[in-house]
Image (cartoon, rainbow, N blue to C red; front, side):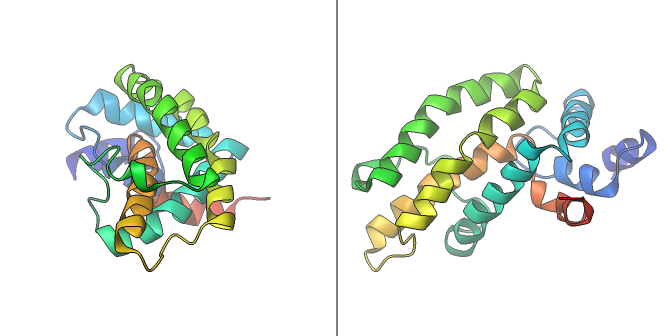
Length: 174
């Protein structure tokens, strides 16, 4: 509560404060918290952030429903050998390429670049959802697909749980 109060005192909206107070990032580091809040505030009305919010929602909903709040945390790469559809392979490959860069950006506090970088995955996520039935009858394949989406969700959570920005995004002009 003290850190959320600090964010509100610095002029960040309740949505931005709520966003950065959630996620696996170190919430006890005020400097990191301020950097993430500043990036979210600056990115909030950009096309990249809108894409990121959309893909986060698409990925997060089935992951949380079937794997719980912890999603794919600590399970990176699990079940990838079961992913054979071109859309699955494309997203998996892109995640493997982008994840180290995203972790490095987070470590350096470059959250605006992180947002832009992860948002580039939106077309691959769209293709996956358009071409692949995530919740399939084969439990092993279903789990592998959910873990793939969970890895994407974890990359976004490096900034915070951007679903808290939904009210601000709904009010934004399109």
